[in-house]
Length: 62
Image (cartoon, rainbow, N blue to C red; front, side, top):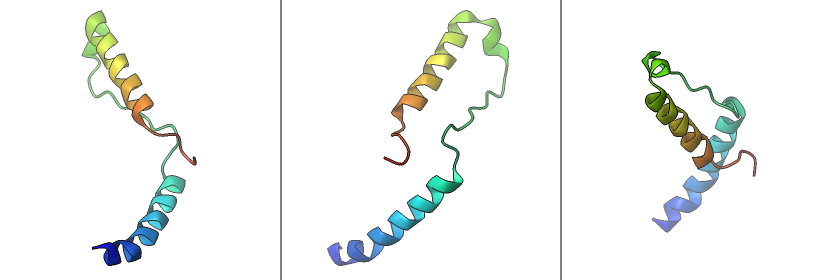
């Protein structure tokens, strides 16, 4: 397995580098239904979920 990893890791690093170039640094979050805007508690939860998604990502190009 370690021999396979020696071969695979450079390939995976290259794929990751290419994906970082293609993917936006600030991805868009799409909310399919607007019902949450009528319910303050639900809207607060949606915003909290968005914050959690954003803060869980490592910074790009570090």
